[in-house]
Amino acid sequence: MYDVLIIGGGVTGCAAAAELAKFKLKVCLAEKESDVCEGTSKANSAIIHAGFDAAVGSLKAEMNVRGSRLIPELSKKLDFAYKNNGAMVLGFDDDSRAGLEELLERGKQNGVEGLQILDGDEARAKEPALSQNVKFALYAPTSGIVCPFEMTLAFAENAADNGVEFRLSTAVTGIKRTADGFEVLTNKGVISTKAIFNCAGVYADRIAEMADAGGFTITPRKGEYILMDKDAGGMLTCTIFQMPTKMGKGILVSPTVHGNLLAGPTAVNINDKENTSTTAEGYSEIRSKAALSVDNVPFYSTITSFTGLRAVGSTHDFIIEETKPFFFNAAGIESPGLSSAPAIAERLRELLSERMTLEPKSDHKDTREGIKHFALLSREEQNALIEKDPRYGSIVCRCETVTVGEIADALTRTLPATTLDGVKRRTRAGMGRCQAGFCSPKTITLIADQLGIDIADVRKTGASGEVNGDA
Image: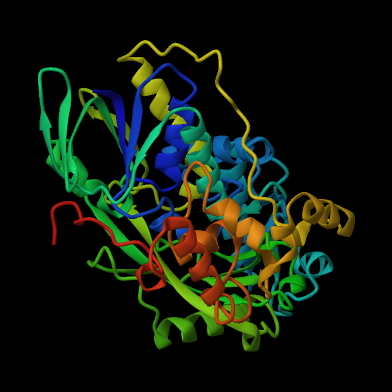
């Protein structure tokens, strides 16, 4: 029997796993997909928000500010990409000043440091590409950007290195309470556990209902994005927002930690928890609204578009609580969920400590070494790496300069990649200008050789189990 079963392998579940791995607990994480970071966590704005938008006194505000303060140090210890680039919220007329002042005051009450309002010329002095229509801007210097894949994988690998068991392609189909805790029914058998952390994203309401611990609903909010090539990434330093609405923070334009330029998301509430299709309407909306903020956004450099789903809770705030004895919900974790993940993990651990004695491990490892990205090394470092392992001298992905050595590392780590998308998220092979057009055959061969399967059996992404009881 496990002490804790975490349901869901997104950034919240993986952060919780890394947090619990610090203690003498038997912990398991169950994820319905074949890899972690396959849901909301793989398709978002990659922003570490400063914390000025969330309502004063809300869990969103508290978790956001705490999480954003933890992430810089975590990025160093767990070796994932993070950049403190700052952010601006733009106002386009005289009336917008009052709204920006309200955000400024809210941010101060939430504990956000360094906020200031700039006039249009001051904003353009920092960001020359801003539209001439910008009259005012709220500047938030503590905002940052991150790689959401690397961050989620870093938490997961650190947890696995410290003893957490990961059961992938394992979908929960039912939950029964027992005298000792719970029997969790899955497509791969029964998992017995004393406690459950429900971190199931857009499916968190269904998981809670299985344990008679619901009382809320989760609505998927569809957000489409456009990603531009690295020749566009240098036009901005800050993340550029527009005034937020009840549907979110609006269409942003932002550099990424890897040097691309990102625009989006749209915001449309839907019923289908698996609908990640892109649309012509979404593409058009992003183009027109991004042009309000930034002059001459180079959409001609678009290399891909994608869609993510945000888990919008009916309570309009994060749900982080012990809803029933030993059943803990971490639900409705929409934006700023990425920023908040380490703080949510802390809060879940604190709640658990009221039920169980948590004894720290003396041998806990609080660091993790990520995959060495050949493209980021100096020429001297590259030569030394090739001398040590000649596989790093063989390029597979020309767009992102990813080597055989990096892919081999991704295929043999604590939580190894088993699909093309798994390799892509760990190494960036296939994320460049040609979008895997040239590197896929070689990558497929490397995966097949490592797994001992035929190349025809290599998948782009893994097959999920049943979706929480649905076919």
